[in-house]
View 1 (cartoon, rainbow, N blue to C red):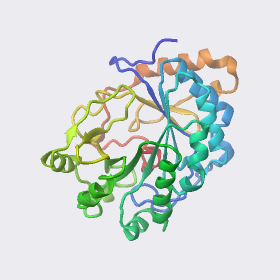
View 2 (view 1 turned 90 degrees about the vertical axis):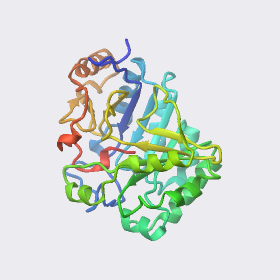
View 3 (view 1 turned 135 degrees about the vertical axis):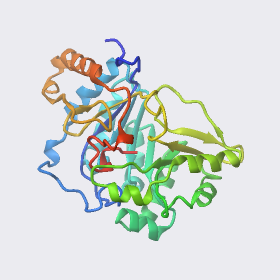
View 4 (view 1 turned 120 degrees about the vertical axis):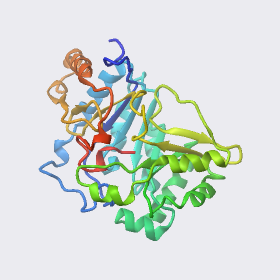
Length: 328
């Protein structure tokens, strides 16, 4: 099977696979009213065998990295088995997850033993009270303990995602940098994005990542080159820090030019763009191992419809009614 590519000669090495829509946090920018099932329940989400088949199809077409997302992926009781199922694909070199961190202290060693190679944790503030206010959960100490547990389990680096918000954490760069001075953490600031339900919040709190980038450059941080299966972050390093800083800036010109990612939802729909409309159902081709050829052909054909860029600047947020599908 040839490498998955689109009409703009972009190759896709990276699959973001949602395994559940369920989340137990109520982040202000994502699920301020908490998770609402919308008719779905745990048995509606991709089964272990369906996950095995879809990741096998992507691996056979050149995918090197799979990120397991949600919702909160660790809400799945079989999450460790899901990691092991993805690991069966020798072509998959990186198995990552994005988590809110609340189960890390308990389970991260088992996840690593099952084959997890990279982990991203969402931490929008290093102040426990503000963390509680943003997430709706008083779990700051547990999340910090989970990050320590990840290092104890053998992870050499942990990525920490912070949604950049004016008047909430945009003024906290010095605090974050002090935190990563002696810790091998890649701190990733993600620009707040407008969603279908979050227009008011966007207008109140959006701030460009360029503000942070300018501060970093003035302090001697240097931008690093990007690998072919890396995510969209611009990564900066400084000789005086063990940690790194990443900036994800979807409103910047040419953000989509290096797109290498495809997404499959927890219901088995292929999304060509996080900000695209609709999705291509794959689920009818996940019932049997014998359908792999058809499955790969449908994915490859669908890539012909992938747009050159998103339309965020025009206010078209596509499927992102909230940010729960981004997963960091």
